[in-house]
Length: 623
Image 1 (spheres, one colour):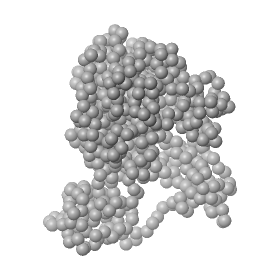
Image 2 (cartoon, rainbow, N blue to C red):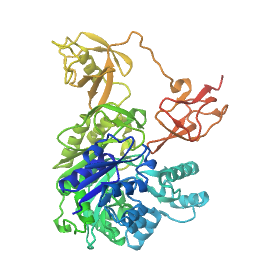
Image 3 (tube, rainbow, N blue to C red):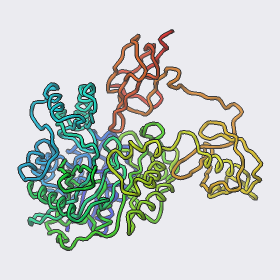
Image 4 (tube, rainbow, N blue to C red):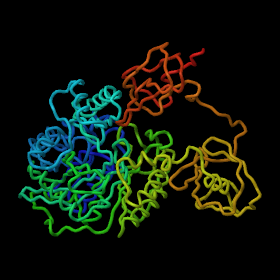
């Protein structure tokens, strides 16, 4: 077993690796940027090294600084985690050239599977079925459009070097192809330094099925069964589960055998994932499942595989990197029960899932389940990295029981003032179609209205807030409002303010139980995964702030201006794209709220802006 390990990553994955390493007696070294100086993974490790400023490109992505940290601390090995440099073949080679052990896939395997077009060609040669599409070298817009026409709409444009949902666009209308191609290429260049794309047939009822594979240096390769990652939004996974609903044993055997064949085709060593796209329109069938790509690293969703197999995949990684054979043979692996994982993000579903940043004054995560997190109460969600707060992982004997447990867990999340998708997750896990296993990658889009909590508080929230404003029978009501319920007469009414808006609410003796707390700024109510600021009405309560209705287009989050699509004095139509803003690895297009004229243009390409900054002001066309 290795003696010491530097983790070239941050957040929840660094914490998760440290836990296993500590159990195995391996000394750990953490690295951190300015923004992460007080992060949990820094304190958990036996030693920590500062490697640069907050932006990842100046710290976590600087190979020389990570190698220097390993040399300075005497680390024997480097674990890249996932993201950042985990699938960088050059970094893997640099680690080994420095005399260190690389806890990851061989550089040759990373290169073989890192480019989607080359990987597909290799899979075709290995007789692994692949999705119909265009993988050619001619990258001219004219050729790409012609190939898309030949494949048939809709198609999917994908970055050749892509991953994590970046550099990917679905095209339904030929008229949108040019604009979406340009956007895809721009995002691919920014994320991967490579703007080449491929074209694939878009499967209309797609299921995202992936298989966990593992290889060692002794020629052994096994699979640890499949995961279903079909619940996605903008190609980003939201809820993952294992095993896949509706998977029969014959189809499982076929897809898992194909995954092992794919891994053997590149002499794979370590943890990897073979991703497949399945046409779920008639259920899962072996002849309707195709190879998409391989992730040559540990995946965010690996805990669900650990749950159903009883294996620690990070321990497997460390043992394989130490030269040991795989801990289990294929015949020793079994599926036990059902597991689900939900990604709790700092984002606001009510505003189109825009990222939410700021201090975590309140952070309470559910107990009794596995929670993988890299932040803590009193910390901060910064704009520099992925906005994940935690992964909520549940296990049960049946799928229905696992879904119910996940819904309850998400509903118990309490975060303030950062906004989260907790209520959205709770609704998704409890939705009848999800519980019934009717899932595909369009699930969230189809049910969005039912899944996204309303911007205005429900009657239940209003009733709970009103109950919390009634003084307790003794003592100061704000010293402890936890679980407060009122028994006031039903005919009484109370005026209050929730989320800045006035409400007049009938007191209800049966008001739903909710948790309320006092903060320095006021009171906050937590209910079913949502968080609401509330309190007595203010005498000077007036609406304030610029809104799109007055023509002011402001930055909805901190970020960088990628493109300015209009000029001063230009005439614009309602819905026309004005500015493209990039933040937290995502592009957000800001559009005109009505027909008008650009009266004021503050946005400048390449400029960094803070949340609330005026970017464009539109004046009505009639003056």
